[in-house]
Each structure stands twice: as structure tokens, then as C-alpha cells.
Image (cartoon, rainbow, N blue to C red; front, side, top):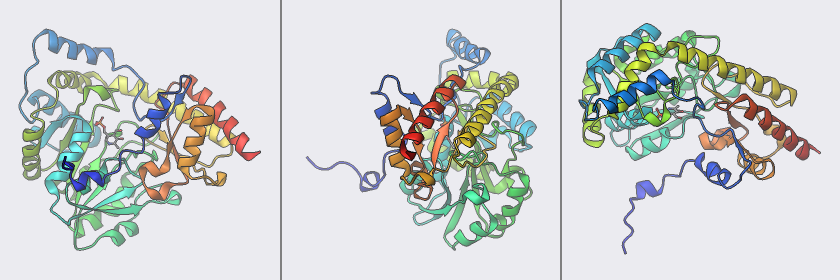
Length: 386
Ligand SMILES: Cc1ncc(COP(=O)(O)O)c(C=O)c1O
């Protein structure tokens, strides 16, 4: 038989995160700190709206762009929280933030366009840029800059072929944020070079101490920013597959074509639940955030006690310790830790080659699991130190 698979897809590597989960599944007493998925149940009043949608037969396709009532709530919520000004017709409700990333990149890339991606970064960006015919231009962020993008780094990466900058703050995997001052340092360069910004703000509600600033709310940025957000992380709704993108109508109308043909509409039942989340979910977010913050502080203290250097994350639910002193690649460290102590962490290389001396620990797990995990980590590092 012929080889039916395209060369483009053959050259894409499978996600470096999944491999570890597959091994972990075969080990009964394994503790995983690998997955970036909230461990809380979806708040019941939100889930109930989904159930009610089924009971009352609201189970048909919605308009391609999503229920108007949901888009109105998304518009109001983002105005209230981040001073973003996008009207309901400038919003597309998507099947998770994942779809929003995909259709935005596919809509803007011509062959050979360069898209700036910050490393370490979420695993989907680079493959989707490549599949869309674009060229990922990687900026390797530095631990000493707290994994923020500096204006010098940005300026240096721009060429005449640069079309867009893709950013993700609060960040997966580092937990870094860029506050208003940090963002204001790069907006001049973005505007001067006429770039589009794709801002994945899926963790916008999870910041500890500082409030999130949305780059699209800053002067001169609204019409050159596509903001991506969703319900998975803030409302613990990963399986509901609900997200959205917001941007100027001229761009959103084009992105909508792919969404129409590929997806039709985001899950209807989830859209009804999403309305409830935005209207009445503020307390749920605060409660979950308080719990994440406890876990974050616990892990920071533990890593300090174990003498493992770690930059202080101010957002998301990840911590990104520096393991270079153990003289092992992150892949070897994670594999060894899994085999010997039955503990899953993700090697830094899953998020880019420049972060081989880091591991990602997710604290979207109960404090009890984290406590047991830290015992195992301690035992492991004692065994390799001795
Ligand atoms: C940075 C980032 N963006 C987007 C997503 C996708 O989220 P979802 O498709 O569940 O909205 C994730 C999930 O882990 C993520 O970490």
C-alpha cells in the first residue's frame, strides 16, 4: 500500500507530555504531577446549567459564532475583568482554547511567514505554526529575566518576514506573568513593526498577588491583538471543551470561516453552562485560586528546603524548578524519578530544547498528593546525591 500520510505531519513530533502519562498508567501507586488540569469538580451550579440544557432539549447546533447570550457575557466579563473592548460580533466561541489557537494561526499565516514563539512554551504552538505553513521563530527566554520577554529579545527576533508574536502569560510551563509595566515595554516595538499579537490568556484568572493585564487593553493594541481565553482552567471545565477568541471584526470574520467549516459550533450544552460560569462564577474562581496558592507556597517552601533552585511563579498552576545541579538531562531525571519513585513530572524539553535543565511540576493536585510527592522527590535526590 502507498504511504498515505503527509510529510508535514510525519515531521511533527508527538507531545512530550503524553509519553510519561502512558508509562504512569501502568504503575499502580504512581503519583502524577504531570497534567495541567484542575483537580476540582466543575462548580455544581455551572454543571447544573449543562444538565438543564439537556433536560430542556437545548441540544441543537448554535450559530457558528456561538450563542449570542454567551458572547454578550464574554464581552462584559472581559470588559469588567481586563478592560478589553470587544463586542459580541468580535468574539468566536470555540472548542476550547486549543481550537482558538489553531484557527487563529491558520487564518493569518501565508507560506513563509515568521511567527515569534517564546520558549519554553505550550506544546501546541510550534506544530500548528508549521502545519499552517509558517516558520516558528523561537525566542529562548531566560530564567534570570523571570521568563519574561524583554524588548531587546523581541527587537532582535524581528525580520521583514515576521507577521505575529504569540505570547502566553500567565505562562505554561513556567508560571511567569508579564504585568502592565512589562507589557508596556514591548508594545512600542510591536506597533512600530506592524505585528499582530496572539495572546493566549487561558490562565488569566490564576495570578497570585498581581492582577492580570491583557495586552489588547493597552494603547494602540486592540486592533492588532487576538486574545484567546476559555473556561478549562478558571472554572475547572476542561472536559466541557469551551473557549473563545476575541479580536477586531475584520480578522475575526475571516477566522470564522475555518471554524464554520471545521467545527460548526462549540458544544451547545457547554455554551449554556458557560453563561452561568461568567454570570455567577467569581466566587468559585476565588476559592480555587486560594487553594492553588496554598499549594504553590507549600511547593516553594519544600523546594527551598530541598535546596532546589526555583524561580517564584506568579501565575497558572505550575512551578519550574532548575535541576541542573543534578547533572542529568531533564528527560533522564523525569524518567528515573518515574521508574524509581513512581512520581511523574514533565521534563523541560517537552516545552523546548533550551529548558533541558528544568522540570515542570503541576500543582493542580491535592495537598496530600503534593506532600507524598515531595517525600518521593526528596528520597530520589538523596539517592542520586549519595
Ligand atoms: C497555555 C495553554 N493554552 C491553551 C490550552 C488549551 O486549553 P483548552 O483547549 O482546554 O481550553 C492549554 C491547556 O493546557 C494551555 O496550557
